[in-house]
Every structure is written in structure tokens, then in C-alpha cells.
Image (cartoon, rainbow over the protein chains, first blue to last red):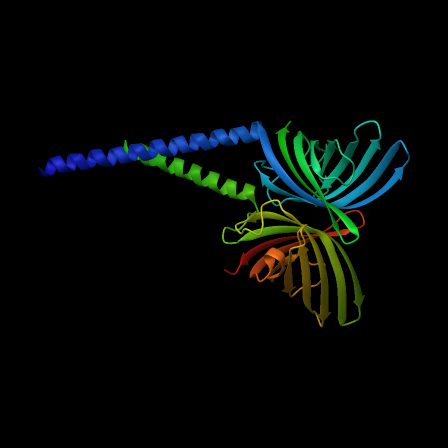
Length: 183
Length: 173
């Protein structure tokens, strides 16, 4: 009777041990696969940016041309990228141009330089069908500038821009989500 | 057999803990606290002046910018909401002992307003952390009160100074 119980106990212990090993290995294999995806595949990064808008405008009967600079800060918020980590901050300077013609839709083009505290640079090119100062959704391209920490990181992004006036100053808040690939 | 299984388990567990550590490192400094009711990030243009005497310095400044709601468990906020923020800030340093005070007004586009009352032992322009009071003023924030932890960081762009403040707030029930 006792030897039967001992045998049963041994079988149970071995089964538990085997089960733990299997679960453990499958978890590591799964995590390794996820890591491989991030290091060689696409990483998703969300940036939140806010900037002060300084603009000027020239208007005629046929068209209105607006130009502006935006200065502010951006921060990485949600990320799977190993270099663009959560909490990473950038100073941001952008130039914007929009032309609105009476006979066609208006285009808004923006080029932004983002620099971290060591002056490693990213350039983001944003485009949307809109006039300056209007909220909306658009598409952008993300380029890590050569020679810096972000060189070779490129991708496509979507963004939402929202303008808000704070007393006499105009600010823009942008949430941009990018799918990035490392060259 | 047992030795092999024990060895495999140790290798497995060390692998899992390595993944856990690297995940922590990736998601970094400003993971939103699970204890807080809402987290908000202010980015604002900072304009200030200082009068400096031999043993006394007094600085005053204003911050104007936008606050973005990063996470919220309360009905008054939703993730992604934007508010306009205006702050007045002063700091006084006497005999090497600085003290800073700041009061910020935050308004939604519907003009619901709350204030954040901050204080810490530092000068204007110094990065750092502190505690602040959340004070509901009007609209959906009226009568609300709470406490926030915050982390402030200054950055200079071309010729302007900007501040980023991460607020992590708990509202009294």
C-alpha cells in the first residue's frame, strides 16, 4: 500500500515538473517570437506633441497663402520600439504652408524637426487637405536623420491635429501614431 | 532526468525574468500610475524674468500651453481630451534656500475649469518632482478636490523655453 502511494507521488511530481517545463518553454518561445518581430519587423510608436503657432497670412480674391512656425515639445507615449522608448522627449520646430484657392481644395504641408537632448534628429513631413488652424486627420512620413541615433528608422504615420487658443496665443496639439521600420 | 528538468526550469525562469526587465525598460519613466484617477501632460511655453541681488533672487513667469489627458478613470475626463492651461509661477531664493509657487488654471473647450496649486523647494527653471493640490473650480469640476504628484522638465528650443509637466492625480471620493 505504502509503496503504491510512493509510486503515485513520484508520478504526480514528474508530471508537474514536465508540465512546468513545457509551459515555461512555450512562454519563452512566444516572447522570443514577439521580440524577433519587434527587432526585425514593424514597431508602433505614438507621439504626443504640443506647440505654439506663430502665423501670418496673405490673401487675395483668388487665393490665401498662410505660413507659420510651430515650436514646442513632443514625447513618446506608447511604444514597442527599443530605441524610441516611452517618456523620450524632443524639442520640436516646424514650418507650415497652406494655400487655399477659391476653385480647388486646400493643402497644408508641414515639415518638422524633432531633436532629443543630445541633438539626435528626426524629421517628420505632414500633409493633409486642410487650411491652417483647422482641426483634422492626416498622414505623415517619419525619417531618422543620418549620422544620429535614429538614423535608419523610417516609417509612415497618421495624426490628429487640434488647435486651441489660449488667450492671445494659438497652440496645436498633435497625436501621431507611426509604424516604423529599422533599415 | 530530474537534474536536466531542474536545469531547463532555471534557464526558462531566467529567460522570463529577462523579458520582464526589458519590458520595464522599454516602457520607461512615465508609465501612468495604476493608483491615480487621471494623468495629464502639460506642454507649455514658459516666459520668465529674474531679478538677482547678492543674497536674494526673485523670479516670476507665466506658462501658456495645452494639457493632454493620457489616462482617466473618472467621468470628467477622457483619454485624449485637450485643455488650455495658463500658470503663474514665482520663485524666491534667499541665502541659498529656494522656494517655488505656481498656480495653474486648466479649461476644457466648454470652459469647465480646475486649478493645480504647486509648490516645491526649488528655483524657476530647475527640473524636478513635487506634490500639488487639485482644485475643481467650475462646470463638471466644481466641488472636486484631490492631490497630484508631478514631474517637471524644461527644454529650450531655438529661442524659447518650454516646460513639460506630467501630473498624476487622485481625486477625493
